[in-house]
Length: 282
Image 1: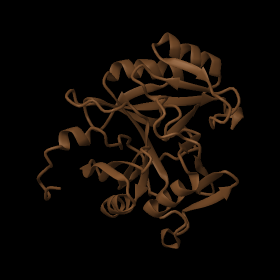
Image 2: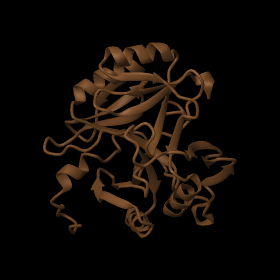
Image 3: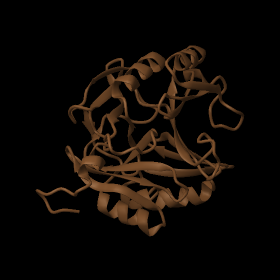
């Protein structure tokens, strides 16, 4: 990394993937999900797709041209940004987790055999990094002020889930990286083992679920290890039909796919996967 005032040669590519584009902020809780972000090649096309399927509106991001903040009833739900033209990574919904020390978190990720692909880099009022766990699931972490946004509250996604190869191994990895259940964090995040899944709780409520059964080399991206983001819609059938009409695909969630009854797995035109279900299905 370069000293203050300089910037790494790869910063142009890396910084575009960083989150934090809303004006309202809250104190971070170590290890808790704090934002969702999607990088795309066609920002206008992505905005049109998500407006049609999820009813989102958009405003210009404080990060500048090429970024936007998605809104539900005027409240921030997620961030969208544009890939660099000479860079073609996979389009994937990426959760970011709040951390107190991005450098320490990056070191912990590497020490445990996972990969820090980008950063930590300074972005806006904080520092962020993009990583993948040992099974290839992509996630990010953020040191600094976090949006007034929390899984299961307001406009934020109601559920965030990790589909992984070995749920207990993954729980140990993320628990060590993000200090889950560490008394030094003030008890903000706790981990509960429930039969074949792991429940991560913050503010006294579930914010993430970890499930096993993913297959690393499966050609179907829906079954490979990944973080899954769920969105509530009033009418799942309408959302699925709108996705197809807008150039995406939609399929009823298969049994065991971690989606409540009536849910659909949707793929946007650039390959970004997410699920939709009714609020009552939680």
